[in-house]
Image 1 (tube, rainbow, N blue to C red):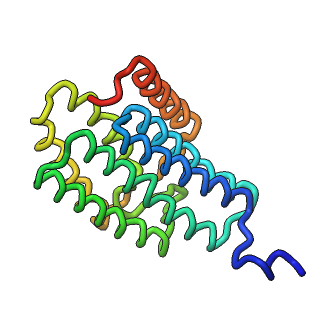
Image 2 (tube, rainbow, N blue to C red):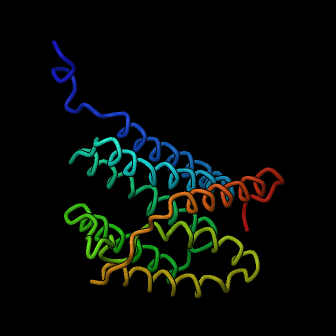
Length: 208
């Protein structure tokens, strides 16, 4: 009796890598719930790093599949929406306006990811584009929100909420945004920022 008689799916090792980003996101949520926000950001960025390469490897090794595409989309919900927004809530975005802005970003992100699962990347004249602002920018937002909150305190709520509303709007706006392709540079930046936040955690700076 073969494997398909036991399981409803036969994931490739690329799909396992995709699930790795989900595990890292879950660890980030756990650390955020314990108030260790700097460490939660490390896991958040690590999940982004894993997610960045699963699709690239799948394309290079011709392991792309509809199942892998759908799995990646579901994992992205946690990597780029649930975890970053929960970190922002734990940082201090817990007043009425902030919660509305967090929900707006969540809704916009879900709509954006659902549309992306249907259309994918658009190519024109050799250049790849995303329709609507990519959800990955939530991670940069969190990375910058942490020091901003430490400098400005509670007044940061209004600034951050307005930016979230604006990002939510552009995620569902019918505009083209170039797909990032400089993977080596992106990897270096992600790992460098993750290391910086790990250092913050190790010296005892867990929250802004």
